[in-house]
Image: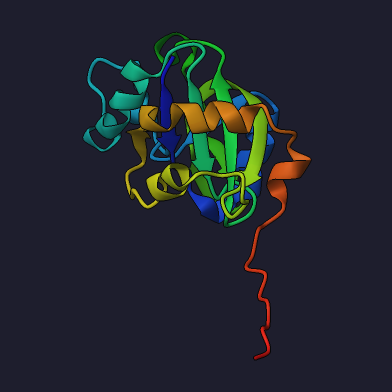
Length: 166
């Protein structure tokens, strides 16, 4: 099993979350038929998604920032190898026709990256600006988060200021 960071277009965060709830993880750069990753002569603009196509396997865990709230992370599990479960179907979201790359997943939970139960390595990995990257180094922290009830992960932790009098 591998662990991946996976970015979406946060402009339509609620659309993406609804899709995940329905078992579909979508990715952008799928706004024309020639970007279908199953084509032999794939459009150059979609080639950057081939890493996802070839690497994500059934049982892998993906962490997706900004899916509903800016500082929340959504965790999903791949229900098939990407290369087997992938399909291409352009979505019509508001005025945009895009997000045609679809991959089958199962929603696991979401958490606030500012929750005190979230380790520094997980917070640090989301400084990466890539669309897709390996986060196996965070495996132990992710597995610990998966054991915690979601309601205990959503609350944000802040500083508790204590005033001392001399």
